[in-house]
Length: 60
Image (cartoon, rainbow, N blue to C red; front, side, top):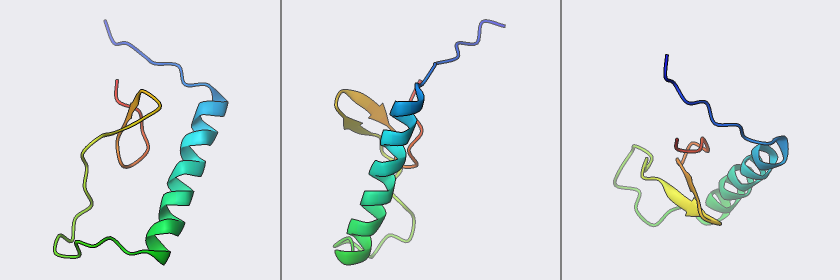
């Protein structure tokens, strides 16, 4: 009880999916310069004022 559920419109989910897909394509063409770390960077990023995990799920 007391849990907050954030509504994310379908258009926003599609936008995030397209961003992830574009990032994957970009990374396949231009690999990241730091191949030392085998784990992905889980630091959140900000896109148009929205905090997003690298996995694409918005932060609550």
